[in-house]
Amino acid sequence: MQSSGKRGGWRSYFFVPSAILACSLLGGIFSPGVEEVSAATTEDDIKASLKQFTKIYEALEENFADAVVPDKSIYNGAIPGMLRTLDPHSNFFDPKLYAQMREDQRGRYYGVGMQVTQRGSNTVVMYPFPGTPSYRAGLRPGDVIFEVNDKRTEGLTTTEVADLLRGPRGTPVTVRVMREGLPDPLAFNLVRDEIPRKSVQDAFWLKPGIAYIDIETFNENTSQEVEENMRRLGEANVKGLILDLRGNPGGLLNEGVAVADRFLKRGQAIVSHRGRASAEKPFVARRGSQGNDYPVVVVVDRFSASAAEIVAGALQDHDRAWIFGDTTFGKGLVQQVYPLSENTGLALTIAKYYTPSGRLIQRDYAHKSFFEYYNRKDDGEKNPMDVKMTDSGRTVYGGNGIAPDEKWVTPKLNKFQIELLRKFAFFNFTAKFFGSGRDAKLPSGWAPDNAFMNDFHQFLLKSGIEFTEAEFAENQAWTKDRLHQEIYTTAFGVDEARKLTVRHDPMVAAAIDALPKAKALIDKSKPVVVRR
View 1 (cartoon, rainbow, N blue to C red):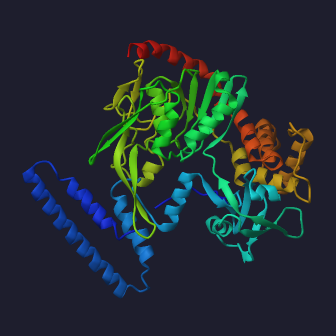
View 2: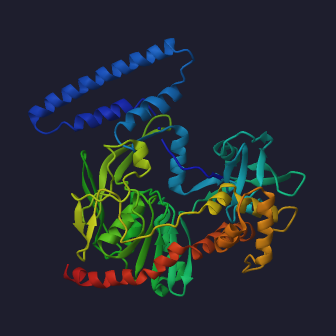
View 3: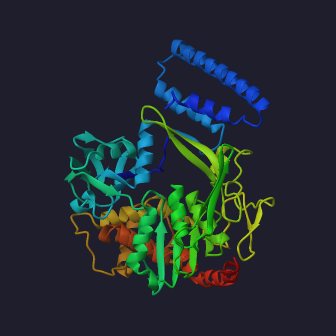
């Protein structure tokens, strides 16, 4: 089971002082004389600080009004507080979040396979993943989970409900739900299984010769999944590719490098990183594109980060792809995870990423709050001190993520659209439509007709959603698209609904139109590559 919340991760405290001490001592080596003074002074300062911290903690334990819980005060307080003085991405992983991080990296877990969300005090099924125990058993979007193995779920968070549903492979779990239109609850007896978390959604053809592939994150399987998808499509038939990295938060460096590798020429630089205590380490394409030089448009947004930016930056610097969308997040800090005691760990920033042209991906975080940093208050700024050139001589800037070659401004939702989404109108209507024992099947190629739209209109009125008839008429096409996608999720599964959504996405349509620009980049850079 997977909740609809963001992923997170963090870890132990006994090893932290010694790890910080070791890093501090290594940082003072410049010459024999300086080494002795710097190391001794730093060690004395750290010992004094640790002694002071111990005294403060002892005072808390002895005098605080309530009992002091070490996990809460140290795991969630002192250690994260210390790391926040360094940078936004150094983190401590407690046992639970460390296990979750490893699970995300492996791309699989054991459970029943569904996406859920919180609605008031209830946990609601958003959709089951195709092929999983939940899907095979017949759970549907809109089902309200009220009991798991005789334990009531009212008031529990989605994470707590997810923990109830996860467990060893082959173990049974009973899920009881309430379904729209049915007076009595339904019981589903499931057997937990391995649930793969695909980082690469199934590639498909947008039109003849134009392929689409969506990479949602970079885990241990990403490059292999890309390879399998391109092989399944038949890469020799690809005349143009839309590579969607929107919302991709990054992940494993080596997987980002491997994905970039397959689109570049063998020997071309992909990324490098260097830090105070780590020598510069370059990564170059080892396999290369093997003659596949079809045009590529990479679609990005402000939530494309880290490894996603490495891919976009490498393809942009080598003029291999046209970057389309919004300026990316700007996370160019390299974290190394140090396993610690008690199944905890420390993700510590050790270096910074640089694109092949030498630009720094990382945005400034030292002169603003973390709130401003994560909410992108500096959107669109260019660093005039970090100006580089692509292979063909185009100007690119560093210091603020990857700026697109062509910007796409997502149309803002109007009042009517916001109200329908805020009230979950499409989701609730779909649950009602398939309620009352209706079979969740529709004919292939189904689409909402006028009668269906009239039914939705009546549903909105009965639900107390305020709108004018003019607003309903003006938003007819948008509303029909949203209904189409939501109904498809229940009738045909989330994978088919995703394909429908992509085909109706105006940004994807604009990316297809940009493919000739990607082709022009390749043609312009070819003489440069030959000379090199």
